[in-house]
Amino acid sequence: MKKLSLLLVGFLLIFTLAACTAEEEAVGENGEEIPKIGVTVYKFDDNFMSFVRRAIEKHGEGKADLILNDSQNDQAKQNEQVEMMISKGVKSLAINLVDPQAAATIISKAKEADLPIVFFNKEPSSEDMSSYEKCWYVGTTSAEAGIIQGELVTDTWKANPDWDRNGDGKLQYVMLKGEPGHPDAEARTKYVIETIIEKGIEVEELELQTGMWDSAKGKELMDAWLAKHGDKIEYIISNNDAMALGAINSLKAEGYFKDDKFMPVVGVDAIPDALTQIEEGVLVGSVLNDARNQGKGALDLALNAANGKDILEGTEWKLDDKKAVRVPYVAITIDNIQEAKDCYAQ
Image (cartoon, rainbow, N blue to C red; front, top):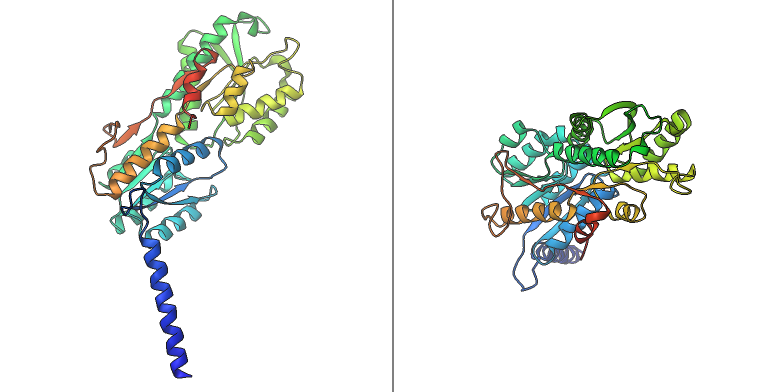
């Protein structure tokens, strides 16, 4: 009996070692060992972030052994996922924060393990970024999307004087805001209106509420606003395309976009579903938030860090004074829609 127990223990040890060895020995296309990189996304079913995740996966093929995690919009869960990935021996981390305020917690975990970390899409504070030398960011300049969207609203409003339904010279608008406290939501909300005013257009805010980046919530809010304000609404400004598409669904149910009944709507991200609506003459335009290059940039930096190389080696990226790679926004209308389509081409 004692011999049998020893044999069983021996077999278990062999299988455990074999499993560990198999887990550690991920290899690339040429048979070389590739590094393990831990990735979290704040939630997989976010329209835009799903494209960023796919870009990371695509550009990581044959180069990195990716451990991908859906944090399900739960910062506590994300913290646990980071601990799990560290325990699995990742060589670097690529983190799309649930809550930007939690960056310090994630950084402390990476710092303790002496692991490089690349944040993407949600930017930590300057203080957090400067607290650890092995810390970088890939994303956008938040204000830029609001400024470009404001220019888009201004140009289309001036080109279509009949959109001023009551002829008072003011633009009466409703605003679908993203997650409160999110740097992009706050900047887009602020700068889009500031830009419109700077361009000489007087505005009146009828409603501003959060749709939490979500299409269903965007529709729910638009249903309520149409019931309350009806055709007093002259423009719908949305912090992202998902909420804009929800608003469009609400408008369509009320007979808009047929028989010359039109309501201008603009979004941000230029996701494929939004591009379809632009082509159909429904969505006025969007602002391309380049998911492909955000994902590629995050993977490039995390891969270099994992391999112990200079963070920018072999890439086209540049770092600003905040240790950040900035991927530019682009206004998208029917006139340059192919530019956005190219970002989703395989």
